Image (cartoon, rainbow, N blue to C red):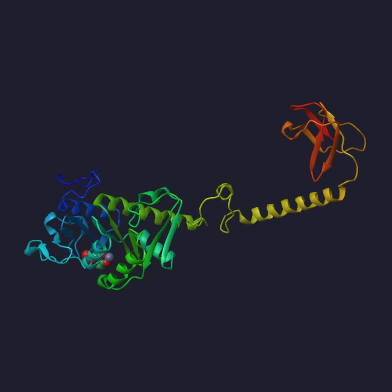
Length: 337
Ligand SMILES: CSCCC(=O)C(=O)COP(=O)(O)O
Ligand SMILES: [Zn+2]
């Protein structure tokens, strides 16, 4: 991935010290290869001290060169431009990039991506927010309000703003979303993509990958009838869900009906028999040969439910056999008739 000899793009050092002139073209190739900056879509801004390096407009992101970048201050003063013969203009995303740096003090990078997962999520969530919880990759997202990463069990909330025909028209909406959601590192643009702002260039790249992953997972969860906003419960995790588009849904419904009928019959039999007749327990036997008897249970007694009591007694109550015996403790082979 690290094609440029001088690029520190692959470095794991959590600083913004890498030269943006190397970082940005290499990032363009990386994001283009992921399908997030194709067709000249997307933009990158990286801050180093007072200098903000910004991509040119309408260029193929995988072919950018170090000299193609524009450099300016946060208040718009131009520091450097590409060679004139290249006839490049600055990204139309510049106002949104600058807004993001203004709204997130200390930010090191802003990346605008046209990743299909952000576009699809914006269509699947027609409201103003995307939410997800209990996912490992949430831990890779930065919470600007807390000044640290979110936790696995946090509910990650990402604002969604309406897409506009021109990038510049988005600026007030993205700025307002960053104000209204002081935690967020990401704003989704409906039918367009997302903006991600992070404390360092490296962290911003990791977050882009994490948000894209979480959008993908949320879509898959929805396909399987799972709710990304629901924390896990033990029973929910273990249960086998019945989905209406399961191929065997009709058979499974029929089986469930039969089971319910059987259980209903057994229950009414037990209710009718309650208090009638006697239950005899034969210890140490596995066969029952008496006349007019019906085998109720053959197996082992469970010592954990026995109490040391005065006398033998036994009874059937609501389907359970309660057997008590005198001064005896341990597993014993029994039959009940
Ligand atoms: C086909 S991309 C249209 C503009 C856009 O949405 C974008 O992200 C790139 O804008 P730029 O001016 O930087 O080319
Ligand atoms: Zn765009």
